[in-house]
Length: 175
Image (cartoon, rainbow, N blue to C red; front, side, top):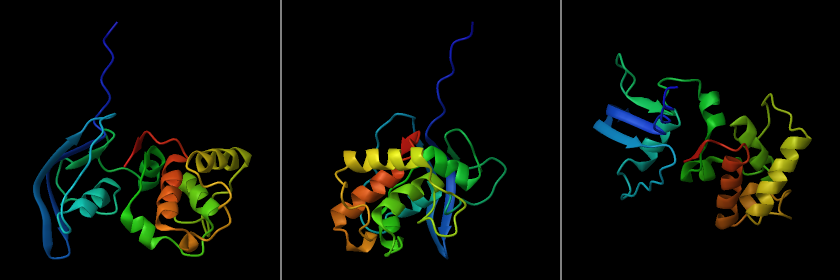
């Protein structure tokens, strides 16, 4: 009986070259974050924190080559919707790009679809989705705010809303 294989790293980046427009943000970036490891990425404005998050979430790609420079949960290029089902993402950009008129409950439920809101998304929340969203909102102190538009929430409430959105589908990892 063979020993169990350890899980693949959560994030594995090897010798990545990443551009944003005409600016080379990363040249030879190497980073490995193991599954279950707690990691904080700190740095001044312009250091590449958002670029790194966009690289992991597949909103941005490293230069193409034979072997993928970026692997998330052991996989190179993958369908973004599949990746979003496996990860919970919270970002400053998401908070500022979120649709202002979306009610808090809709914002949380959109985590099941990996979308920003539910308009035009082929997802209809069922009783199990509503129950799970209610559970997460209660855990994060958002009960009673379900119908409030996202833009009317305080910054802290918006952050907790986005955290609830990231956790509602029980992701393998939170980024």
